[in-house]
Figure 1 (cartoon, rainbow, N blue to C red):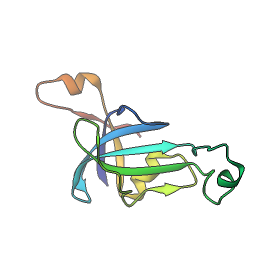
Figure 2: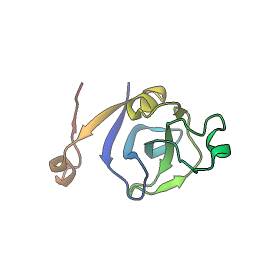
Figure 3: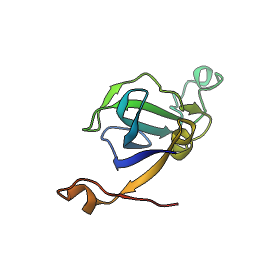
Length: 116
């Protein structure tokens, strides 16, 4: 299976989000951010009662190496109804590989530590 190297938590995301380096690139993107969030409550009973307004969601977005979103278009593998980052990446054909802080600081670059 393809590898998604877990790099860091990006800034300014609601819920849980992680920056991943994709190997091989996914949809021509070397980096993606996967975000898993609870629904946004408007506190307007009409809006909050609309179908899908109260569903959690997990989305994949193209990203830059610094952890900023390149394009807010949801990439394949994204889904609504649950918060599950590993599932979204699995839907996209990737498995998560953890990278330790020591690996990131090493001169030779990150060395993956596989967990499973």
